Image (cartoon, rainbow, N blue to C red; front, side, top):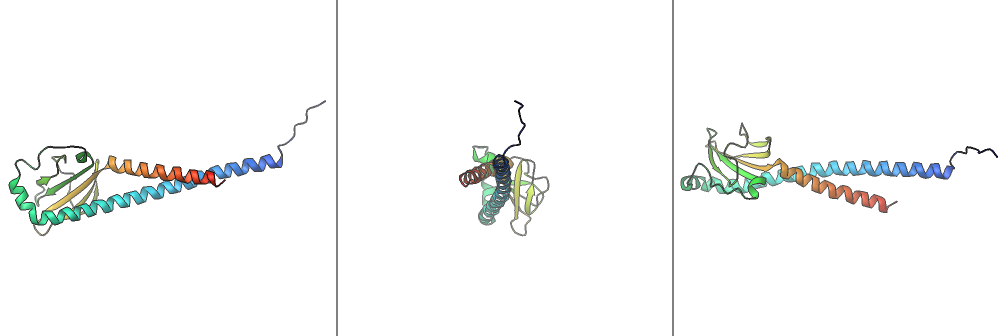
Length: 170
């Protein structure tokens, strides 16, 4: 008897097509969720930098001169610690001289051209806040590595939750 080459049944073709579209839709939704989380995390981290600068700015407006007079070195004692690798601040004078800095902050300026507002530096996301008319500028920064870690963790959790819900809904 001759073997007849039969086409797959309509049920099998329909099941394969539905599975393919479900997987593609799940990947597309996960990608969209990942992008949205990436943007929102960046916005949240920027808001945190701005709020930190505002809070520190209030203190430095009234206490900077006393802190500068009391320091015992070029800017701050070296105590890098864990926080210094993730978050740093510097008080810059009108002539771009470093007046004060947080422990663990670089001894050179965080950005080559300090300005008010957000600036991207190679290793830092920096927010500059003018502290009055004397030309002082507070630079508050978060490391790019810390920001990337936050985006990856939030994105991974959101994508995994989206995939789990997608699979449960099938």
